[in-house]
Length: 452
Ligand SMILES: Cc1cc2nc3c(=O)[nH]c(=O)nc-3n(C[C@H](O)[C@H](O)[C@H](O)COP(=O)(O)OP(=O)(O)OC[C@H]3O[C@@H](n4cnc5c(N)ncnc54)[C@H](O)[C@@H]3O)c2cc1C
Image (cartoon, rainbow, N blue to C red; front, side, top):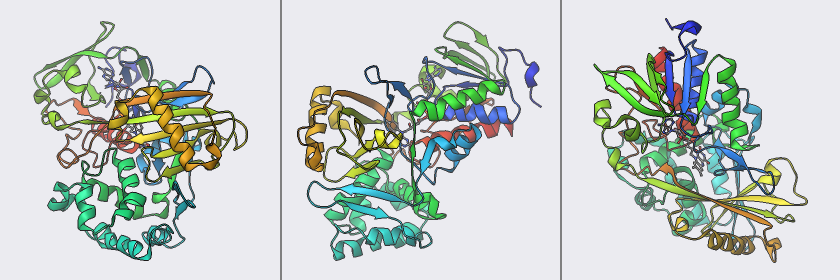
């Protein structure tokens, strides 16, 4: 039985350390199961790596990085429904992605009405920029994708996406026009670094099962308004406590249990259970030697950056809500004016995303803005002479861990060697890349162990 609402404020049933999506998801589930919860976040805001803030010059809600979701984000949609925010995410009726090329007409990948996986396969065969032979080569991927369980395939687990595409006989055009942009976007690093098995897993989650799984989902407001604000409301309305700017400073472990946690302000808590939802690089700062938790191998983790260039123009020259740019150092263009319902007339706010953006993190913000404007002119004839009225570059150097063959599998799970301590976070053993879905699912799973 839980300690119920009578538990003293400093001795909650569950202390959640970290107010990113993993921590918020854990807190929400614990409260749903009737536990008393205190969530402590080190920063003055919630949301972690998925948050937004007001742009001082325009007042627009700016994300730390534009996020895309998918229909196969089942844990995330359940979380959104629970916190009453599912109406703030637009899910396409069917997968539809516009691929823009610097020359010639754009191409569109649209899923058909056929049942999965044929809805996507027929869509792929409809890509007009690929020659018939190149489209036929795409079909070679089908059996490999749908035949084997990637997680049980040792050879695939040792391979990079690049090596796998070689084995699948994918010509250069197929990589450039399709695989690179999808793989780098989904796993956030270059195809020679990321795990083939994990990529195949992602494709299977999207392309198999319900047709809805492959559809793209876009938050209609800033990330905080969609995710962390409603989650915070849910937590406080259900009797939980949220502390911001007051994270865990020191954790005492004795006899295989967490006995106390001291917060930044010196407050000493004695929770019955602790869920750590901090990133892999913060775990040693909170717990010291992680071997005592039974967590080893953190040295193998490396982070990969994402850079988002936010540009405000006085007029529109992009009509679509989002598009992938083929053969560009920029990857995706999101038209925030269209997405947020302000329409495709008048001033325009674009968020341009580059994943695995190692080269861009070395550039100055001015150079990045110049590069973005040059590229927009290459892809959008209407962009000629367009000069942004405002610009903002957000570099997230540790956006996600890079899921290489060494780290994609064998990550620590939610149980630790410390009986009342559980782990959550996008880097834990979710069998997913570092995503909203991985974070939310991990928090839900860790909470399940506390309340189960
Ligand atoms: C620019 C960018 C773009 C992205 N795009 C996508 C996308 O399109 N689709 C997608 O699905 N995913 C995307 N992601 C990934 C997604 O945002 C993350 O996987 C997810 O938000 C991670 O959540 P988390 O809770 O695991 O970790 P975090 O969000 O990092 O949360 C951990 C929290 O712990 C806190 N903390 C650390 N130490 C302490 C302490 N001692 N005490 C208390 N609190 C502490 C941190 O301040 C932080 O708030 C993107 C990420 C970035 C950065």
